[in-house]
Image 1: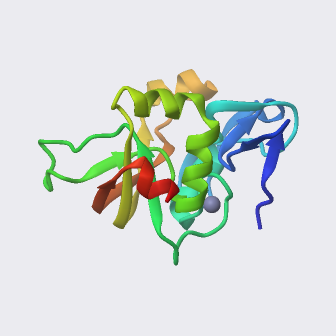
Image 2: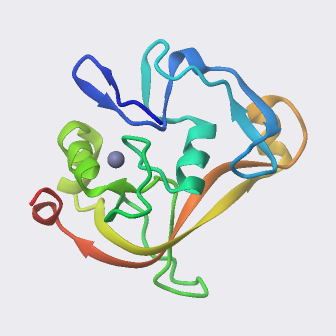
Length: 179
Ligand SMILES: [Zn+2]
């Protein structure tokens, strides 16, 4: 089970990549079960790269329903989305949302809001939406041959990141999150 890592006093989300994990390659990912852009795993080595999700842990968190911060299961917990993603008006179900940020425990989402300067900025400008998620699914995004070539130097289509498909949710506020 994932252990919470810190950089100084700052909690480092499970899915954040570290500078000791720079090698990217093509491989069959156990989470997508398909040819995917993979990344070596040395979680905790070097410095955390906030804002740069680890390719494999990002897919793992979404596919296995793990919390973005602590890496533990959120299956039987209140699930929170912190994302700037908006509904896609032209989608088959117009209120559905696709986001690349894994979901969080409510308490972990509150910790992220406390520590992450970009989340604070996004909330202040009204770009960030706090949602309590009641129903969701998992999808995998496919990179074009050109996209994969630019990432790993091989011309093949492959899975890149996973997406959380929000189906039922309630928009909440910071008072609910921290209350
Ligand atoms: Zn958590």
